[in-house]
Structure formats: C-alpha cells, structure tokens
Length: 510
Length: 121
Image (cartoon, rainbow over all chains, first blue to last red; front, side, top):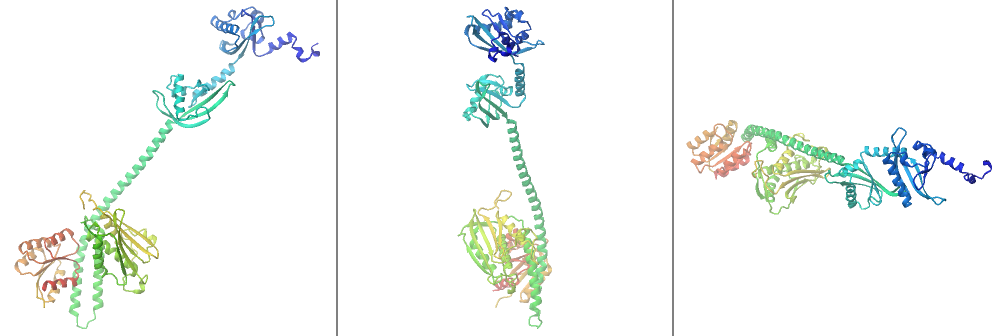
C-alpha cells in the first residue's frame, strides 16, 4: 500500500515518477541514439501538440518544418558526439502561430542499458523575453547612452543612443575607442564605481561633454562580471551655460557701454552748460566789476574829501569797502567754478612757486593762523597752469582759515587756540600731491558726502562753489581732489596732479 | 618831489573812468578821459601821455587792439590794463605786446596809486 511506503521509496514506483514528470511545467524529452523520441512528458507533448504515442519512435523532422528540424538535430548531434551540454534559445510556433521562445538545455546520458541517450528540457522564456524587450525598449527611450561591458572588454549591450555617440555604426571597435578615450583620462574606469564629467568624440560625430556613471564590476546573471556604464550628454547644457555666460558678459558690457555713453552724454550736457555758464559768468563779472570799481574809487574819494572835516565816516567807508570785497569774492568764485578755458600749463618748480604764492597770500590771511610748510618735490618740474592753480591754492587756504578762525576777527569764535594749516607736497602715484591740512573741527560725514556739489554750503554767506571750483581745476589738470576728515581733528584736502601735461580733446597738449 | 603826469584813463564805464580821473586829479595830475578805444588812440595822438590805464572790453575797439595800434605809433607808450575778469587771451596779448601790468577790477587803489607814484619818479 502506498500509505505504508517510506517517502523516498515511493519514487521507486515508476508510475509515481512518471506522474511527477508529467505534472512538471517544464517540457522534458529523451531521444535515443537515432534521435527518435523515447520519452516525452505531458508538457513536451502539449508543446508539440502531439500525444506521447504519436511522438515516440519519431524524430523532430516528423513534426517541425524542415529548417527548424535541421537546426534542432544539428545541436542534438553535437551533444551526442561531444558530450558537451548545449544551452540555446529556440523558437517554436506558439498557440496562435507566433514564435515562442524556448530555452533548451540538452545533455548526453549514458543509460544503465549501455546505450546513449539525449535528454533535454525546454523552458518557456516568453515572459523573460518579454521583460527583456521591455528593458531594451526602455534603454531605447531614455536620453542616456547605456553600455554593458564584460570584464574581458567585450560589449554585452549598447543602446541605440550609445551607438549613436560612437558614430552610429554599432561596431564594437568604436565602443573600444570610446572606452579607451575615457581610460586615458580616468584609468580607474570602468573597473570601479565612478562618476565624472568628460568629453568624448567619435569620427564624424560632434564632440560631446558627458557625465559618465560607471557601476564598476558587478556579477550579472551569476556568470560573468559586467560593468554598466551610462553616458548623460550635457553638451547642450554646456552650450546653454556658455550662451548664458556669453549673454551675461554681453549684458555687463552693454551696461558698461550704456554707462559710458550716459557719462559722455552727461559730460557733453555738463560741458555745454558749463560753457554757457562760463560765458554768462564772464559777462556778469565784467558788468558787476565795473560798478564795483567805481563804488570803491568813489568811497576812496569821499574818504579823502572828508578827511580832517571832523565827520566820523570811517565805519561806513569800511562797510562799503568790505561789501565791495565780498561782492568781488563771489564773482571770483563764480569765475573759478565756471571757467572752461583750456589750461595754459607750463612745467615749473611747483615747490618754489607755492612758496611765492604763500608769501603773497599769507599776508591776507588772519594772523592767528600758523602756516607750516613741508615741501618735498625737490625741484621736480611739474606742468601746471599758475593762474588756475593759484585760485585753487587760495581757495584751499581760505577754506582752511575759515574752518579754524572764521573771519579771524573774533577770537571767541576760534575753534582752537593753536590754529595750524599745513601745506605739504610730495610725489605719489606718478604725480605731484599738494596737501592742505588743518587742525580745525573737521567735516561731518553728511557734509563730506555733499561737499563737491555745486551750490552746497553750510555757511550763511557762501556760494557753495569753492570746493567744486578746486575740483574743476584739479580735473582740468588731469588730476583729482581727495578730501578726508576726522571729526575733531581737522580736514585734509589733497590735490593730485599728473606729471604729464593733460591732453586736450583735440589731441594737442594743453 | 614827484612830477605831475599826463594820465590817460580809458574806460567805457563812465562812472569808472570819471572816478579814477578824479582820483588822479586829486594828486594834481593832468587827466585825459577816453570812453572807447578810438578815443584812446586819438588822445595819444593829440596829447603827450605819460601813462595810460586802459579797460580791456570796450565797444568800437577793445583796449588791447587800440593799445597795439598806439604802441606801433608810439613805441614808448606806457600802458597798464584794468580788467573786469581775466579775459585771458586778450590780456596775454596785451602783456606780450608791451603792457606794463594788469589790474583786476575793482582795482586795488593802494596798488594803483603806488604805480602812479613810481611812474612819476
């Protein structure tokens, strides 16, 4: 009785064994030395569509088309002759006539009866093939070049995009070239997992910038180590980046050009306005100084005529004279500021000239102010316009004096008991520097920020043209005016003049 | 004791010219007044002028041009200029042409009288 038999012993019953074989989903067959079927399990019968009785004693050529049968038998003979197992993919017509992929394994078996047999199995790999097709379709659609490389360097798989990168012919050599190109720059590739950006090129193909991602060696299918390598083409991105950089650069250039244009335009407008202002000022100066002259002369005459007459008019005469001086100073400042005439620069000993100016001007400045000199140009010849620079120096000195002692007539208004102005010269940055420093109250930052603006003034009687005039004179010399100040310590006005004569706009030396 | 001079004052601004004339006259100099460049030339032709004080910008003929004309006829003419603003190019021309000095208007009268004193020595 079956129930009483030990589990392993049950298989000694051929009926049990055959029943098991018939119930396996794998097709199993056995052929004799003449390649006629001597066994076929149910799955094999079903696959061929014949009963066991129809199959046994017959060979493939009795059931399959001639060409298919020939291929089957060829492999069969090879196995019988060599004894080497054969694994191959075969196709048989499916239920609806479609090719059905089978993975067929065949081996030679020496039977206990001393005969040679061929045993084989067929596994339906339709599903696996389907999956594989899906994967292939996937690799065809992704925008990534995919290459599978065996450890011996042979190409196991390349998707169409990767073939396109290699020149589109799909030849293995072109892929070796590609790998070798990359290896030259990245010797570790493709053996280790890595990721880098590089350039690749193939004959007749545009150079590309790609990101290469290599998996390193992996066991795939339990048989051979492979590396999966992906290539992401970033050439377009690089081109976009380049275009973007170029656009950015052009934008900056454009902005700079616009700025220069605007500055040139402003300069032209300013120059036009300054020329107009210069003409207007010259006319006004002429028209006002004539009556000022007659006022001064008349006051002088009145003073002389009344002398010794016992009429005390000194104060009134003094007021008239001071009024004339003030008006004249305003006119001078307007002229200083608006003068656009080209400079008449002559190379000269600036230190010596400054000493003369100082000798002249010191007499006019309040005696309470000490003026120190530290001239260090050492006879260097500096090109300058004496008349214009004279105005700048006078302005600088009188500004410093005013900051220190006001009008100089009221000691209670002195900022400090020891007011000092230091006039110094030196060489710096390829030019001559004239510095007028005072130890006055200094300039508050909000005033310093606006001090170069024409008409800006903090004095109750001031045109606000003094500093702009000094700066204009510096600029006309091709130099500049720097102003610095520490509150409570004083202010430093620095005129920098170049050692070369400024060029005129028409190209001639000024 | 300084000598008395024949002084020519040239200015189209009559108030200026007249007040200066009065100033010089006060020191007993003989003063001739001209109100434009043409008159200045005429004055030099008709009078022995020791020293002239010329305005620069004037109608008809400016002070510098009339001075140049006078100078060509009277090379020893002694002339100073008075200018309302440094009409730079003209003044440069005058100085190069032999003008003795330039006064800025409003003229510093102390300097002016010192100059006259020197001329009178």
